[in-house]
Length: 131
Image (cartoon, rainbow, N blue to C red; front, side, top):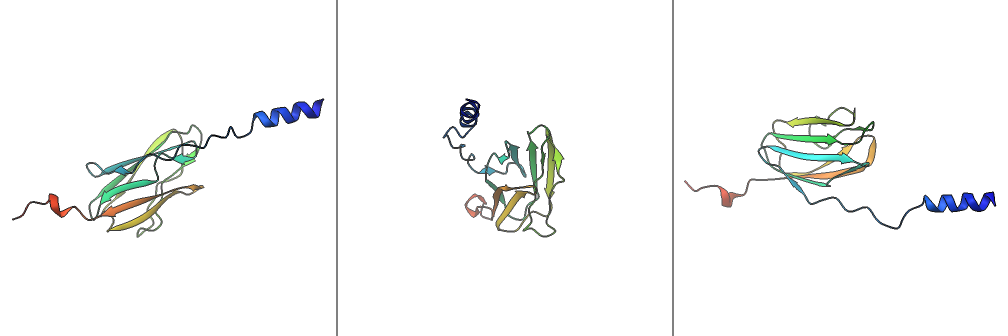
């Protein structure tokens, strides 16, 4: 009887069969700032976009009470990143000068499944006035 009860409890605590929703679409930089949120051991997006060569501030919101997170871009010169900080907390990572064109991985150092890509592209020439 005790073994049957334990088996029932273990089954009740198992996976409910529902997959976690995928991260939201790409977060675009606005006014040289792009925001990302860490919650439930995941980023709210796996894609950030910014213009090339311009100063960029990545604002990282850690929504997890008592959980350490940071944002780190190991592929950029100097390997910039924020410190690991217990949540809830907000940190800013300023990239000045901004990154060159390319795609750069961002990661939380102690949660290796928390990864995404910062896509950096040249400004759209179609929006630049002719002189």
